[in-house]
Length: 126
Image 1 (cartoon, rainbow, N blue to C red):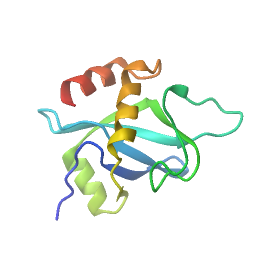
Image 2 (cartoon, one colour):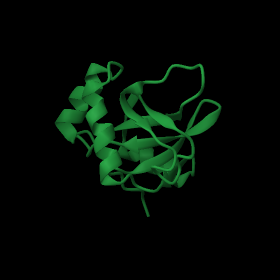
Image 3 (tube, rainbow, N blue to C red):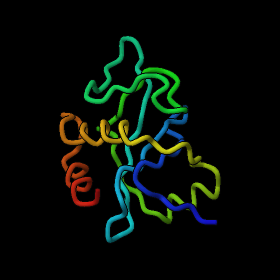
């Protein structure tokens, strides 16, 4: 069965030396593309975007205090997501609950780090 993406879905995706939780933030646009955001652990002495910090345990996969990496927003299409899920390079995880999803949505427009294209894409496809 092919993977079906939707807003609030989460995927574990390779991001450099480790895997990070990514969130599907939108419905697909006319080109079947989605906006995804990454979640990263807060590390002492390293800058993190304070706009949306997530407490450990807020999601089953988030085991340490984390933040949404708005500056790393990206688009991908359903075919790519389905191919990567089928190959098990992207691993579906538990959906976000409504409150956490709304908190992350609110940060898209208020974070100084969200690319303008991502704000537009989000607003056009939410």
